[in-house]
Amino acid sequence: MHNPRTRSWAIFLFPAVAALAQPTINIQALNSAVVRGPGTPGSGIAQGSIFTVYGSGLGPESGVSANAFPLQTTLGGSSLAVTVGGATVSAIILYAGYYQINAILPSNTPIGSGTFTVTYNNQTSAPASIQVVASAVGIYTYAVTGSGQAVATDVNYGINTIIHTFHPGDYVILWATGLGAINGSDAEVPPTGNIGQVKVYIGNTAASNIYYHGRSGCCAGLDQIIFQIPSGITGCYVPVAVEAGGVTGNIGNVTTIAVSDSGQTCSDSVLGQDLVARLAAGQTVNFGYIRLESELSSFVPGTASFLASLDSVTATFSQYTPQTAGLAEYGVSNGYCVAVDCSYGCFGVNTYNFSLQDSSPAQLDAGTLTIQGTPPVTLNQSGGSYGAQLAFGNRYLWSGLVYPVTATGGTEVGAFNVSDTLGIAGAKFTGISASQTLSRSGDLTVHWSGGDESLDNGNVTIGMYSADSSLALFEAMQCTAPQSAGQFTIPGWMVALLPQSGTGVNGATTYPLGWMWIGQYDTPKPFTATGLDKAIVTDILYNGTGVYFK
Image (tube, rainbow, N blue to C red; front, top):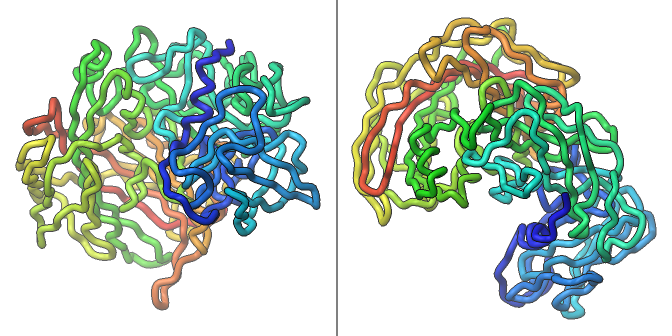
């Protein structure tokens, strides 16, 4: 189960363009598959793993990739030296470019805190920090961000997406890095064989049958974890994570895979079965998605005070082909949770309110979008992604009121005018009070009352985040659960990803930097615009509270 085609995955992961400059390191070394803040579970660079350094002047303008064994410690005039505990080793360079270097940390690098430098054209950068660990697995993702659809294949190396699903009982090959050291040189064709201890979490359970966890056999530093999907697992967005080294919580990232009971497509994507079927038939589809979101959150214990926080509107206009179907990432399937590390920026997270509902590519220009509320607000635009903070500490969105969203039309999407009537925030947590402390150790069961079984396919959306006082460590999480159940248990391995919550200050008021909220998406309303095969607008009102995760 080792495929030589995959060498390119290890090398192209972070391509770069450039212009000549003095070497400068902007950020500490990161696992090449995932951006994870130092000090969080699963962070650190594992012996024998592929890691990435960002900066400027690190290598040649055009960028150079290694393409033959034995691999070298100098490439395109760039080299990288790592010093831990007084011992210095030379990293093996896979890619050298102006803004970035991808390298393998030799398996014989000592474990512990250290520093590294980059040398390019005989000029050496200032040292930067690195934390070397025995194992810390990062799963590569389709969007090359560390979150969303995993780079996962079947045993014939067919790539998993919403139009090429796995099934319970199938064997899955996860492509990753960070299992740990090998015996021998990392510059040569790697030996096969299991490395260390691993546990694969899929959905809310652990896979009982792990067939292989070791190097790919083709590509230095690139790992394969091969496991069997348990029965009862289904959904377009099923969470998958790898815990390494026999250390509880040593999880680099949470990704998703697409699983169905039968056939080659899944059924719960917000795209709808019609667009999924068209993708599966080889067609290109254009999809528009607009969401209005509001959160009512209490954070002062013993009072009835509420903060109408993070009212926002977001929109994405995305094009998908069969080859890019893995980028169609919308939330998490019913009964599961996903998490994203936001320490260096939230990839796939709505930064206006930290929901994880949409991480689509959003590349279609629709011109200028405006929500016609009081006052009208023009949305910020980045490609085909739009968004605006509508209120912070005050209300903008109100239940029962009508909010038109207009677009002038752009290069790919024509003008439109669609209205959304805001729903009601019906579901509320029970048994959780403002500023309560919740344990990060073990499963976390939340309870709620209210809600409407006719909304959001009978589901509720549960969101949360936790940050330390400096906001240097920040994790966002989202779960989907049946509304009628009235409760949901977040697995302990997922809860452990949250950093301990710090305390924020606003004038004389202090508040926790942990938050939880619950709501239901309103029934989507279709609208039409030139250039779109399908478009919907929806809204969600959350009830929430500030809490401390400790």
